[in-house]
Image (cartoon, rainbow, N blue to C red):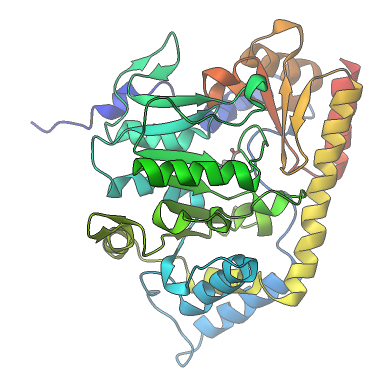
Length: 404
Ligand code: MLT
């Protein structure tokens, strides 16, 4: 008789955004007339910009001719895309990352969930609290997180680093030394950032303790402040302790196209073994690469024409973020995030729990957000809204929230 992976049974409920989807679908069925505005999951609404659409068309045409047809992509991704990423996202910022340290994938979510596979079954992970749930859930699936305590909503074998108002929503160095540290900045869900000096402390800590930092940089394009690093490789010594995850979803609207990249410097070693070689082995065995046409679209992200068009698109979402932030402040809410992030993090009013506020907002304003407690116990009493909607819906949602 076969056995299942019982670690899955330890997971509480379903994935956060599936839960929300089900709740909204039920509400919508009961109130088909309700003009729901979705500001929950961080999915973009603006179309792929023309310069990228043009590159997609060209690549599709190539696929239709024997001379320019492409089959399986190279394991690590096409050289043209890896070179563009290395040059524009790293070397242009003075970071020593080369094209062969970049692995192209179909998105940062998969990579952030899969990367734990190359580490031992008993490594201890540390996460911010609140945190993007994928980091914890995938380690739970792998049997690394111990037992789940429904009362405290924590796992016994995870180091939680509270990111609260008291800590300025950034984590403090943990008392218990972990092996793997997940950091995401600009942060999902709080929108908080680390300055370069603050991030340098983490890099120094990881090098000193022999830990690895998994750095999720999915939201870096929303940074507006000067002293905030766009990549962990701006920090001295990051090549020996950090892996970085990048996404094309939030900077170029690829949530439906799917494209991401993971950067593993060859100096990152456990004894004599490079983590690069392990991920290369994993990639080669389990993955056949992002489609050629999508990788060509990714290359086009770095063209002058696309850059100008994307700048406008990001500014559009940034304007939404400011509108939400200011609107909520005017309405008396305690708000953070937004300045370097598409996420706005607000304190629920009148001591409501996060889920109570979710129901309240859905019922009274027909606005969907994400309950902070879904990201971890320190998210209780908080709520996340995203700036990825249309401007009209954003303005309308804030007007409705002000009226309740
Ligand atoms: C979010 O809403 O937290 C993100 O959209 C999730 C993701 O990028 O997978």
